[in-house]
Length: 427
Image (cartoon, rainbow, N blue to C red; front, side, top):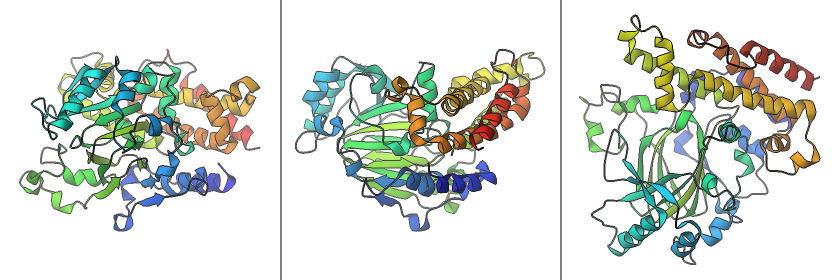
C-alpha cells in the first residue's frame, strides 16, 4: 500500500458507517473490465473497488499462467475429464441437486469424484438430461484436500485475506472452493458467508451473474421477510406476496468468460448460472475494508436468534450462552471466536511491524510474508480497522455478558497493544 492509498483509506473510514454500504451503486449498472496485468496495481484495486465496494471483472490474462488453465481444460475449452480423474478420481466431493429445493437451498450428497464425472459425461451425451437431475459439484475444498497440487496462484489483489489467514492458523477449515458443473447448473439467490467478498475465476466455461448491490435485497423479501430462492421466478411479480419488489433495481448482469475473474463486493446478493460446462475456483475473504460489515452481520444474526427464543429468556439461566451456541451453529462463528479471529489478525501484523521477517519466513508462503509484501502502511491500516471493530465488540452488551476469562490476552489488553503498535509504527 502506498502513502496516497493509505491517506485515502484513512480519510474514507474515519467517518465510515458500515450500515451505509447499500448506498454504493453503479451508474447504469456498468462493471469495469480490467484488461492488462502490468498496468493495474494493488493500490488501484484497493482504491477503486475495495473501498467503494464495487464489482469488476479481470481479463483472462490474469489467470493465463495457472496450471489449471492448461491441464484441466482440453484444446477446445472443455473440462479435461481424463486429467481430472487421474489427479482426483478417488476424492469424495460435495454435490448439489439443482433441480430440488430443500430449506431454500439445494440438497447435497457426498459422491466419489469419479462417479460424478461419469454422471457428467452421461448428462452431456443425453443432451443435458438425467433422471438424477442436474448435479453440481459445489464448495469442494480442493486446496485443503490436495495441498501439493499447485493449480492456481491467488492474485495479489485478493491477498489480504483474513478469513483464510485465521482458519489456516487454527487448522479447522478454509474458504477456498472449486466448483464444477454442467451447462444449466446454477446457484440460488444468496449473499456470501459473513457478508464476505468473493472472487471467482472461470477455468473453463461461461457463467451468468445477477448481482444486487447491498441493501437491494430488502426489496426482494416476501411479506414474511424471507428472501426468494430464485430471483427470476414469476412469483416475485405478485405484490400480495412480495410487496416491495417493484421498488427494487434491475440486477447488474455479468457474463463471465473462460479465464476471467469476477470480484463480488461485500454483502452483494447474487444468483449464478453456468451457461456451458464450467469449472471455477472461488475464495471468500474478509479484510480491513469489510470487517465492519462482517461485525454488523454477526450482530444482526445474534439479534435474529434472540428474537426466535425470546420466550425462554427468563426461565433459562444461560440464555445468552445458548443464543451464542445457536448463532455459531447457523453462521459458523460466535462472538468469542470473532474476538479470537481479530486477535490472530492483529498479532500477525504487530509481529511484522515490531520484529520484521527473518530470511526463512520471508521465503515461505506464510501470512506474515504476505503482510510484509503488502507493506507497513497496509499493516497499520489493518490494525486501525481492527481497533475500530474491537472497540465496538468490547462495548457490546451481549459480548460483556459472556465469560471472557478464557480469552487471552484480555480484550482491553489487546486493544491497548494494538494502539501502541500503531503509534510506534507511525512515528
